[in-house]
Length: 151
Image (cartoon, rainbow, N blue to C red; front, side):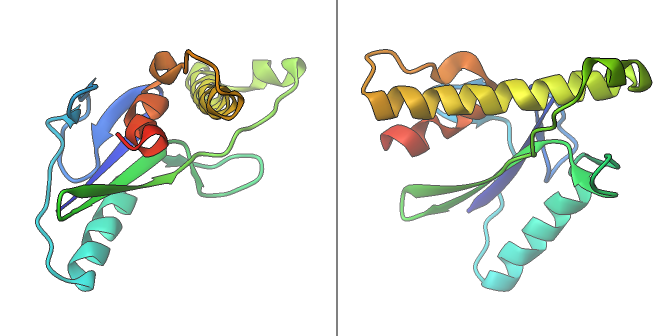
């Protein structure tokens, strides 16, 4: 069984269906995400291709086709779940460049950088053994929580 979701501007969308605003619950992950039964590597690759076609991409200063979202491909086998995350890259910008960017692009850049920062904060808290780990700081860290703590 596999599922494939995208986090774009802190909204969770299903890459295998038309559902674009899914909720996350700590006890069960993404509510309403399409789950596909697969029985071969070719079927898994077909699901990956379908999701990749639906992923948010745009042209950036460095790449003509740059992913503008994080994706999580989940594979469930014998009750265990493996999550493969493809993270959007952070972008640095100078304040004077912002006037040349659309509001959408600024929101996108901010969202990507904030979620990557939240992920770094989770890793740092776990590494340092802090009593509080800020999993709820972003949708990305909420979805990856069980990957960090064996969940």
